[in-house]
Image 1 (cartoon, rainbow, N blue to C red):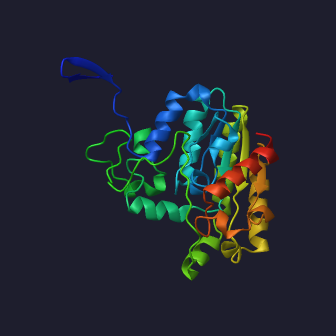
Image 2 (cartoon, rainbow, N blue to C red):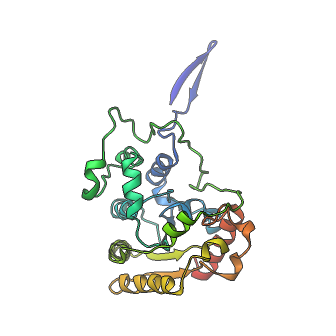
Length: 279
């Protein structure tokens, strides 16, 4: 508490938060509310913005973060799942492209993970160690880039109501290509094992996609996703649902852009997941 003197009266004020960005708040939450989480949402923007935890009950928390590589989800589960005694379900989004290596290359070169996960005592993969530069002056969970803001709500969710924008040919080609199946399998295997050893359900979902995005999706690509899940679940169970082309999510009004749901879509998606998986 902070003591403030106003006139002749002393006031006890709460300490300022130990974060100024979304990922800092989320770390603070899982530490301070470890006993209150039953459904843990991890992964990237398809869940941070596209899965409304309020529809999953007040014991759900959205720990997903936009652009997060699989590497950090593995580290988060390894370190924090054993500290969350009441978690019964972990939800994870699978990208159609499967590989996330480009996310590493671009974002580490830009320094976008330097203090995000350094504040969690988490380092990047050895492959990218040369791109990692520790901040000269580090304050836990305080992002040095002024454009970053604390914008999520109390359950870690950030809604959006933007209408779909045209997808360029470059974006379409990049996001609909698939590579490095083995790496995707490895990450999923490790996450499935961590969850199984904690007695936690591991549910992987392919999120709904707009008709614009689906123009670049192939039947072979869907089969590749199914194959990756089948291989990754050979030793430890993975529950899987593919909603990419689900008929309930065909309206453009459900999307904030060509690959992310808006608040309306995220709410409907969470309701559907709750129903389908009995969460």
